[in-house]
Length: 321
Image 1 (cartoon, helix red, strand yellow):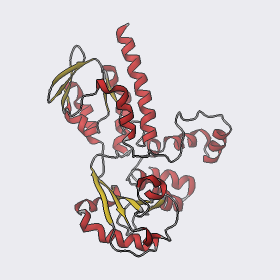
Image 2 (cartoon, one colour; image 1 turned 45 degrees about the vertical axis):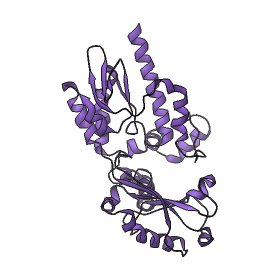
Image 3 (cartoon, helix red, strand yellow; image 1 turned 135 degrees about the vertical axis):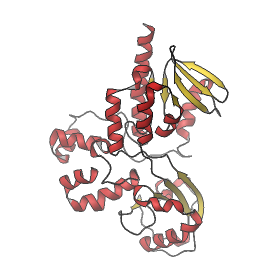
Image 4 (cartoon, helix red, strand yellow; image 1 turned 30 degrees about the vertical axis):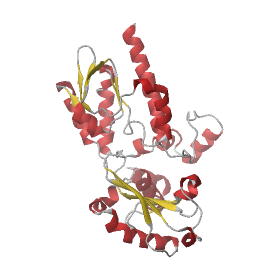
């Protein structure tokens, strides 16, 4: 597990007070259940190759390791992440069909049949970026029974993303920074808090700095029964206690619950990847390109999509030869 891996490499204190909050903040997961090899593949690979994080870092710094196609670091878009799909849409607009619900996906002798609420479309290759259980529910045919069960077995914890705004004059002494994470087992009613208006100043008016809070996940599943208004007072009191300010209740800018946002890279997911190695649906023209393949972050999803595109292109070239 992730916990065991970091406990062995860095000690129990780091595993419990640094890694566990990080895992709950990034994966909304439990470090005792997530698998190190798939949750932190680069670190795991470095450990296998060098038996040392520091040796691997020095080697990478000297230029002896391949670097990612995408630069690392914190970044965003001026008007939000919607800019990314909107930019992609501009290049393929004539081939996109909006407001169309896919009802079933079925393999035929000629390829694949996609049935929607407006009719049927037949294609030779399919790329699915759907959440695993959604794909499982529309995938038809006796040959895909085991794949459907494996997809349904992937777990997604409930998560709430909550944006709260306070008057600027009440937050004069808030430290500058990224935010803070809750150590699992502590009493804070959220996984972590981002100082969003400090990170991305163009997102909010100067008169109303705001926080983004993440609630739920594997370690706070019980909070899914609470409505926002039922938990707001507790969240407000916790923020005041941690950050040392005083204010009336904040304004709720927005709240969104996600039931299939972040797949858990746990034992079920590990067995699923093993299954794909032996029973890849790609040989039948079905390519899986979602955040349960290759990582959950946006850069990881982009890099994974490059790899998927290469596979699809090769398959199309092979079919036309």
